[in-house]
Image 1 (cartoon, rainbow, N blue to C red):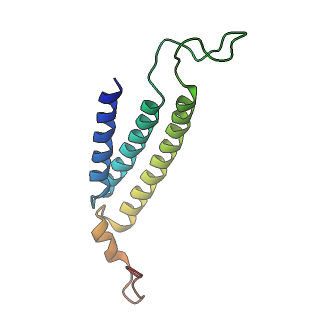
Image 2: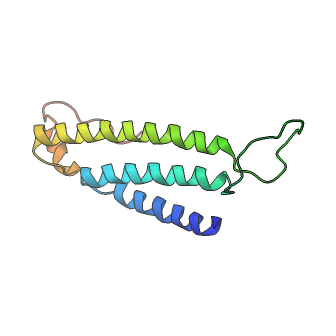
Image 3: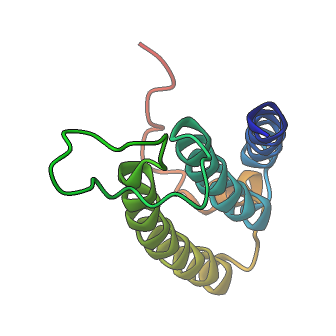
Length: 125
């Protein structure tokens, strides 16, 4: 099961990198969402996928009697889902406002909105 999920994680990361290198803001937004899902799936896969055994230690024992699911990755994923949703909503509002102001969702055309009388920012050091 884990090798299949590892392959899915690789596909998610490759898809997100492809979308993030686009010049269209909507594709960049989808790339950020896909990157968050890939990170969550990575944490989930790394935390072992043992099912049907709750992570409860019986009274008098120092450790679980059987191999159990790790609750820490599950808690991290729940937190990451909330953070990813907030980031997605924030970026969605930024994309919407930039489209309203500039009339384009293409990143290259948004450079035309920079005033010409000011010096260009440094492109390297």
